[in-house]
Structures are given as C-alpha cells and as structure tokens.
Length: 131
Image 1 (tube, helix red, strand yellow):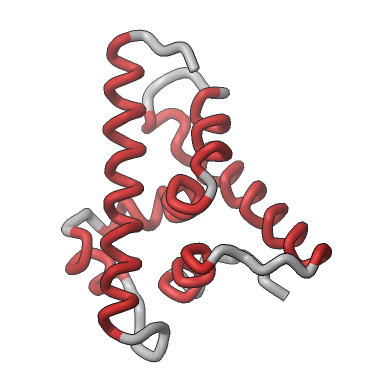
Image 2: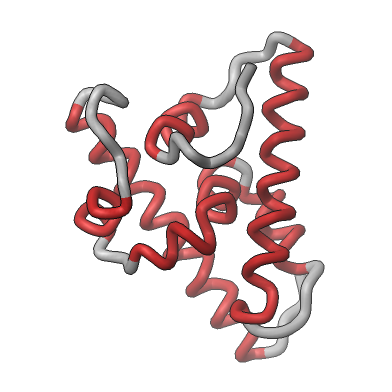
C-alpha cells in the first residue's frame, strides 16, 4: 500500500482502533463465558471505551480487520479520501467480503475461525448468514 503521510497515520490509527476494540470484545466474551449474555451497544461501549457510533458505522470493518486483515487493508486501500467519506462504502464492502468468506467456508465445510464466530455472537444483528 502506498499512502501519503496523513493517510498512513489515519489508516494505522483506524486499523489499530478496530483491532483493539475487537480484541477487547473477544476478551470480554471469553471472560463472560460466551454468547449466553446479551450483547448490545452498552456492553460494546463499556468493554472497549469506544463510542457506540464506531460499532454502528464500522461493525463489518471491525470484524474484517480482526479476522481477515488483508481483506480490510485491500478494501481500505482501494478508496481515497477520509474515513467520513468512505466509511459506509468500506463497511458494506467488508460485509460482502465477510459473507463470501462464510459462504466459501460453508461450501467447503471448512470451519470458520473461532474469532469470527465469537464476533458474530457479539454482533448478532450483523446481517451475516452462517448457514
């Protein structure tokens, strides 16, 4: 990837925030014993200290950055402009790519990564179909 200086710092900051938020959610998931507990924006905010807007606007980007970083990087790199300009398109493209990975795993009967399964339980209304 080739970035201008301000684009590189923003990309690293955005990716770092998404990965950190995802890691914190996975840790909380493991501590609480899985998906038996409700996961909503209040829990997401308490666990990560991020604003709930991050999850509303970047949920699929967060999942992609944590489970399939090359997909996230490729999609992010294919757009120009600030995150406010590209966030909706980036999130939708990550959602499409994630669904394709899920469908591919279901077709091959290859197990999905455990981290992805946990994040899908944390975000039950992600719109991603696992069956």
